[in-house]
Figure 1 (tube, rainbow, N blue to C red):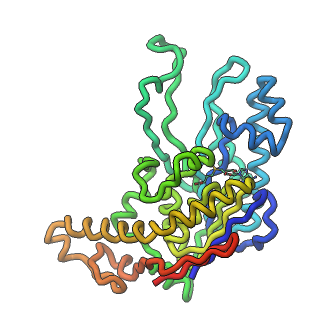
Figure 2: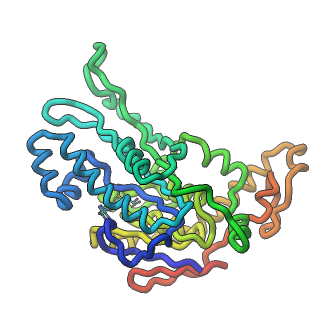
Figure 3: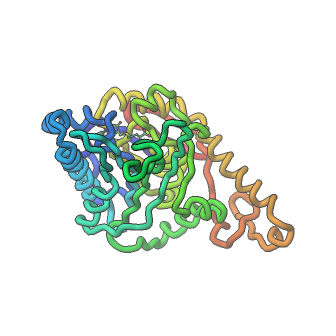
Amino acid sequence: MTKHEIIVGNSNNVTTIANSSINLIVTSPPYPMIEMWDQMFADQNPQIAYDLQSGDGMAAFNKMHIILDEIWDECDRVLADNGFVCINIGDATRTTNDSFQLFSNHTKIINKFLSMGYSVLPDIHWRKQSNAPNKFMGSGMYPAGAYVTYEHEYILVFRKGRKRVFEGEGKELRQKSAFFWEERNVWFSDLWEIKGTSQIIAAPKASRERSAAFPFEIPYRLVNMYSAEGDTVLDPFAGLGTTTLACMAANRNSHGVEIDSEIADLAMKNIAAECEYLNQVIETRISNHLTFISRLSEDKKAKCYTNVPHGFPVKTRQETAIKIDKIKSVAFNKSIIICQYE
Ligand SMILES: C[S@@+](CC[C@H](N)C(=O)[O-])C[C@H]1O[C@@H](n2cnc3c(N)ncnc32)[C@H](O)[C@@H]1O
């Protein structure tokens, strides 16, 4: 069984979540200096609207990060030692006071986590290629005035304290939560090319645009990579609850915090509508594995091990205990969701 909750409130002070009770944070905050989030930041500090109006982009940028920093402090309070933090963030390009520049959000966030004593781990570039003909900006074909088009976002990865050690029951849960060899090769590469549209799970376009939801595949990979069954995951910027859905599919507990009560309502509706596809995600994961095995040469097939719970071949001994549970039922009680597995 797993338990999930969508909490309405400001994630800079989540009193219902106990100290050191979270194993992994997977999130995507509003991006400072991206226009769609100006109002949201200004609502939390009206001085930001004044800075933007008066053309002081750098002052607005710094104040937006002060808002995020308070939330990273609260994340630090609830995160257990050895826990991980995965943050999807894009940098912003913007002209303020007639001057174009990059506002490097990922640099600010890395500096904040360094100041809190976290280890910075290798990050992932999520490449979102645009084929729009007008994607190049600046001075056309003339030198020294054009700038590179940004088509990637970052997934920053931080660790609190030292490497996590698994003992006793935790060791078994870790083995059960292993990923397939071929998944490891893709997931642990530093470049992810994931399109929003090719997902089994994709919230309706209008609500996606309003909340800037990330594709399901992003939190699903991260939850599988940086936590084990039995763990609890937090998304302090829950939006439409994509991280919650990923946790339900991956058999992890979760909390999502969302400041906008309308978006939190949409999240509960989105989770209710999309959870019927979660078993499809699980089935696709298994069928992709079987296709991978079927394409191995006879020589390589002969060297495979047998996965005990599912009875299918796997490449390595570490995959022999993987057990991917399908969801049997999902029950909703106000803001709480309970998932039972087969
Ligand atoms: C980029 S969106 C997250 C989208 C989410 N990953 C998804 O897939 O739907 C950021 C969300 O954070 C929320 N938010 C902004 N400031 C917040 C705060 N201080 N506390 C909690 N939520 C906040 C916004 O309302 C928005 O829904």
